[in-house]
Image (cartoon, rainbow, N blue to C red; front, side, top):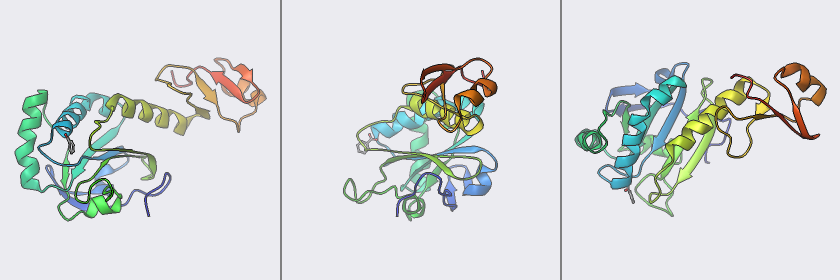
Length: 211
Ligand code: BEZ
């Protein structure tokens, strides 16, 4: 069965380009981003892994540890990494799991046989410090992911984990947020001293509380 939001992210031990990793131990108390790509030495994947490396500072700022996976072996990853670095002008600064036995791909349901029997799709899992899955995304091989969107979602996840707010359509860090329905308007006025704008009894905006 596929993994659902709120499930514990399965633990595993795997060989990576940065040595053997025990996943939960490696995550520690950090947030995690585990993402699969279909294959090494492919064009879209080369841009995606480069983009991820270029965003190292953004992931670090948010306390997120990043790890990639495909079903290629370690020798293949190690031969491909210099290409990623050359094309994108950046050091690949996160581990890539060598999942030749498909252990991780199977645990995370990353092979969708009706799309490809052999390769992983472009799966994304954001994992919280409690090791629970906070977000899943699935893209086909032909569509590279938007890593700004992944950062945007992480901002929302981290904000809403700590405050009784939700984020509206197209929200980005710094925009107004929405008071969750469980909080009455009377309580919201006390909880959110920056103000509450009542558009409907069920739609109450408040400035982002952690700004
Ligand atoms: C790519 O990464 O470019 C790619 C991989 C598999 C199928 C199509 C594109």
